[in-house]
Length: 440
Image (cartoon, rainbow, N blue to C red; front, side):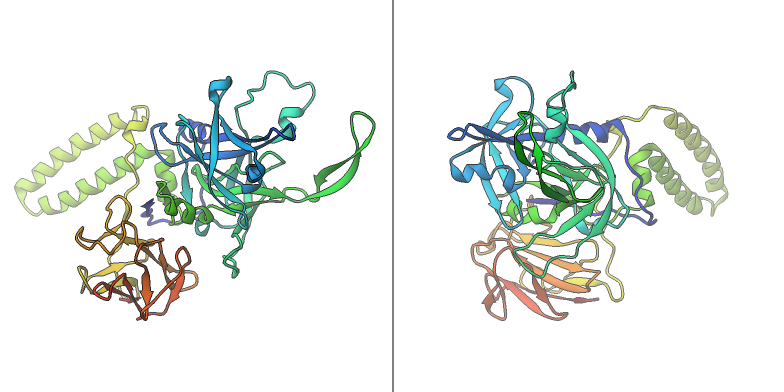
């Protein structure tokens, strides 16, 4: 289940780190410690994870690396720790995992009482964008002489995106992001946040090498030391979306790259509201100023509006004053990528693809293009259509539908995007519902 937020930004600029207390508190609360217990071996492995799914503290799902909870494949038990005391050690089971991509979804025995994260696609990242790595490195727990630390307070470090890897040509391999934020053993499975507190990736490894060290008992033991400075990798958050869709776990993902207007909204929402108000008033003033009486009304109205705006700007910002980001989709112009209805309920309708993918199905809570309820062969979330502006290609992905998505009469594999040429058509379950991709 996916809620897509498409940023409408007239200005483009590199993001500036968001440092508001609200964003920082959310990143802290959404990051959790994950453990995997092997009773037969008497060992406990520890790593990190983050909350996904329902809002309002009701979520019972978290994401992490598969290697953090891999002991469950050998009879071990996973748990999520959210605070001190046995009541805050919440048993979890592996709901789904992908060993090749090193990702896993956990379902907990009770609500976690923590807020879920939002996601940003790897396509929004550029070199030198600021990022923050959160998690629970074991070295921070084990350091001698350190007292008074909160065992459940995640460690955070800042860095930048060092490299954005392209999607792999191997459908089994994960897309990666290289970054310079400090991560260590124990950070595995923790979130890599972007400048706005959205999860770009799942921290999975750093450049390490094995060496022989002398332990506390004077005996040699094998240890790992950094092979290079500030070199770490995260699995792109996009790799999770297929598993989340398959298990109907709700999530919010942003595909549009943030610009200066978005950054201003995050830092000074009241200024953006004030500017929008003045813009509306200016437009109204142009119409009113055409008459003598209108000019008098404009003078009086602008005077009052400016006075009210001045008072509003002096008011401390509140979380309640910040409306959710709007989904702004431009009208298709010349050369704009579109999804056209050829046959069925949307025959003759052209929908723009320039601001993000379009999900098609019967459930309005899961999709943007809603099919009539009587079209029972169409699944609640049937297919996802995308346009990749960088590669200039269209694709369609079947979302594990009951009756399939077909191209040239042949069903395509579920969960794997299939490239479409401009003018190429596909249908949902039946030839009565046909769509075509192309340019307006």
